[in-house]
Amino acid sequence: MRIAIIGGGVSGLVSAYKLSRDHKITIYEKSAEIGGLLSSYHRENYSIEKYYHHFFSGDTSFLNLLDELNLSHKILWLMGSTGTLFNGTLYPLTTPFEILCYPHLSMIDKFRLALFTKKTKTFDLLKLDGISAEKFLTEQLGDKIFQSFFRPLLNSKFGQNAGKVSAAWVVSRVAIRSDRGPGGERLGYLDRGFSSFIRKISERITGQGGEIRTNTPVTSISGGENGWQVNGEKYDAVIATIAPGLLRETGLDIPDIPYQGAACLTMGLVRPVTQGIYWINLYDDAPFGAVIAHTCFAPRDWYGEDIVYLASYYTGASSPELKEKMIKDFCIKFSVREDEITWSQMSDDPYAGPLYLAGYHEKMKKVSVPGLVLAGMFSEENYPERSIEGSVRAGLRAAGEISAMADKKGVNL
Image: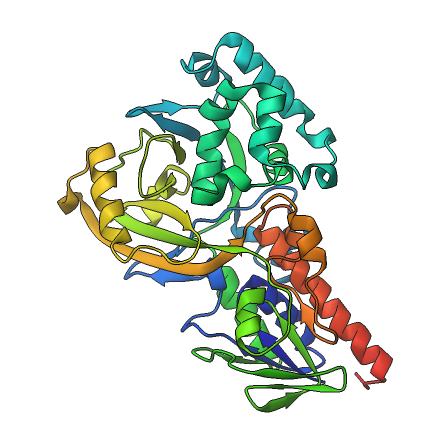
């Protein structure tokens, strides 16, 4: 079969890797580099992801894929520390002792928060899907805990939409990150970054006869179960991994689903500035919602300088002056001189991920096109939180659907 895969992110690459052994695969990627949100900047002496990433010990599909690609030796399990910037003060919140010392919650509040964290794995997420996180958390924990502990998290991930986010998202988020030890959260990363994974899977695809077309956006899709045309070329099947809103622009009649944009500023610095904390959620007003000090997680020796991300989420379009505003505000809040920033680069994607608003699950189930295999971040595998693992599983499922389609049509493999 001739198969077009729209989008060269993780799901598209995984589908292509699995299918290119037996079929003729063409990946269409609008950017100059494949990898999607997992693509990297390539500096003189190192590569660094354009958007911060890590994975978890329970991400079995991704871990199995790394093993299949002979990359298991690159897996590192590192400790991720957390904190909050509140009224100009940076509070570490990694260890039980640091949480006990946090002055903006009482001992009773902290006890209630600990009990709630333990309960998160018992909640029925589908029953929580239609409830806003703000309403649910306020009812469960009270307004003080919500405002002091959860609102910074919601603001950092969803910006202006924080008040509409589904309770299912926040409960799943807490549950997956509740297995932390006294020294912090154990997170997965690859030695020297994820660029080795993108490179290896791409080499496997092309080595098996697949074609990867970068700088090639899809402008038209038409057809159905009897065949498709993508940019005027004929295919037997199509896998689409991009957002429904982008598919609608190609002429497809597809139900839409809300997405949000992400603007991520990556900087090199001459010194550490976050008191050793990896992930900082901001309670204070700022043009970014989180500070991710990458070299408080991955070894600084890999880069020869400190790497910091500033993350901002938005709906619609980002401000054209956002980069300058981010740098200025960061320098003030963390006492950094601008000449201490060795380089900075902004990546901005208006379709960075789904908006997990209350009622999201029902909308997600309605997104379909007969004969078209969908494996975007809005798919079931990435509910109720997108991840590398979810994208890998979406790619594997899409490849399985195509293989079943080939068997049904009697394609001789």
